[in-house]
Image (spheres, rainbow, N blue to C red):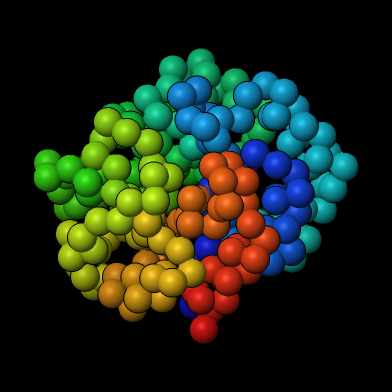
Amino acid sequence: MHTKVKFCGFTQIQSILEAIELGADYLGFVFVHKSKRFVDADKLKEIMNFFKEYPQIRASDSGNNVKIVALFVDPSREYVKSIVKILQPDILQFHGSEDAAFCRSFKCAYIKAVPLGSDQANWVDYEKTYHDAYALLADSHDGTSLGGSGLSFDWSKIPAKYYRTLPLFLAGGLDESNVKAAILKCFPEGVDVSSGIEVATGIKSYERMGKFILAVKK
């Protein structure tokens, strides 16, 4: 089973098309107001018009199998519900201090980020608390900042694969030059990248996306 690839922080339709063409498994959209990759109402409308124009992209029998992920940091329940109603994401991703009851309350698969940039984060505790998560995402943020910083962390903080009880998505400073080493070290079910495939914040590079996917697959 190959390692899945999640590209996050899309702000442009062209980049979405390119990511799908290159074979990304997950497309992430950021719904955090203070993020430079924030999808505001106008951008969301543009994205939804795109998906309506190309419904086969999200059709379960299309062969694309691309999943849409909506990312939040300590959102209100009403805000998440509003995005779920409009975007109908396959997965929600929570990067803040959201408790398990909140995460599961939307009746949607969810990923919970583990802030391994903090000395207080304990992987086993997260597995127990968020035991019904789609996956845990190991990132370099410290619980007070957003992901997508491009900063890496000590991969040894993640338990070996045979000790883990939930799928692992690995993020934090990944790019085409180090993702293979990260996979061989941690054996994640998926890798998540944002700044590592950009030429500027929120602007994805076709070349870097392609190189990243090739590095994962080789």
